[in-house]
Length: 128
Length: 111
Image (cartoon, rainbow over all chains, first blue to last red; front, side, top):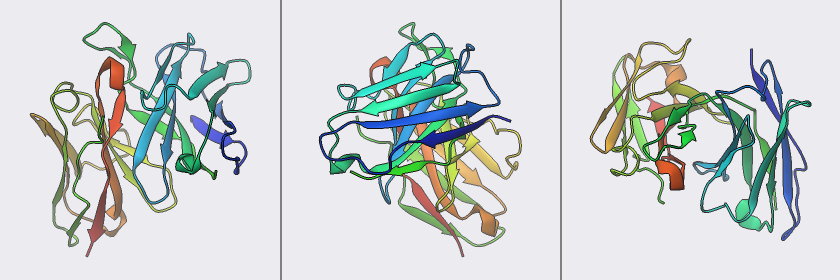
């Protein structure tokens, strides 16, 4: 059974960098076929896709966050991480890590995850 | 790019059916077959309920079904049960620039 668990500071100061780690059990993040993803949910609001990393290190980010986001992975530790810099109060949210189980070529020829997220971590609230 | 459009709320009585719509554009819902739906209970993480427009993951009751027509996807829950109450989000691939989009969410109340 695949399980994901987020960890990291629950409070970050304005203008600093938010750093979270997702630890995966029951699966290898170094195998092809899955996209290891970050998604956030502002308090009382909907979901927002942040981005993901593929087993080969390829990343794909939400264009609205791309200038501030870095997703990386450490396959030996079975972890992938999120860094979001220059945070403001607008970045206060519950941050989820999740596995995207889809893997298709889009019409432009890019191999992509298409947004089939399963399972999810329990989420962690980060306040700025 | 804006989130996909969902009704803020829907309701139904036990045993009835409800349908939640998810409207996008030809650049997302209408342009790809990669629509998924998530159920979220208060304080919990979302749970994949439908993927690939109409497929159900193992363990999801067949009361849940999905469909798509043009730029609008739909989730139908038949034989409503109390445990179906919660928030539902649609999700669609939106191309190699935008990535993945979610809907704004719909609160389902079982009366």
